[in-house]
Amino acid sequence: MNNSNLPPRKVNFQSIVSFLCKTLIFIIIFSVTENLEANTDSIVASYYNRALLLKENGNYDSAFIILEHAVLHTDSVFDKEAKTNLLDSLASLAFDCNKFEYAQQYFKQCIKAKLQLKKADLYVDYIGLSLTFLERGFPDSALYYINKGRYYWEQKNDTLISTSLENNTGRIY
Image (cartoon, rainbow, N blue to C red; front, side, top):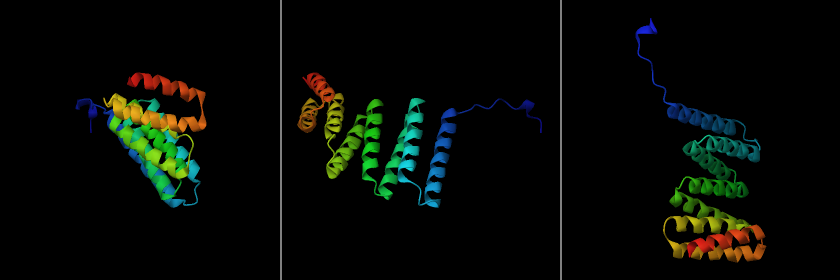
């Protein structure tokens, strides 16, 4: 067959990236089910590193998909510590993409998980949550959550966060 008479094909790079991400997800899921003794940290790290690479290349939707699958993996192996880190990443990614409602959901899930683990860095997520409300035009809710962040910060007394708390409180007013 002579292809010289055919018009040039348009290449849809978004479709190619989507297909590659789905293929990667399938490969990861297949490898996890094939090797149940695989180290949870290395699997989650693989998801996370892939998501970072996708984010750096501007493929935010694909990064979301990978991180969400990583969260599902941590649920299946009951790794709550890794789950909080991934939820933080999802919340930050959603915030960076101006998807403030999603960011709120992930910050709230992260706060809930960190409360169960009695983690000391809750203030970071409360600050992030307050900023999502501020960006959506709800200054009262933003102030409420920044004050919750301040409460948890006072228990840790991190000077870098103190500056962030003051700057973001000033933005609310």
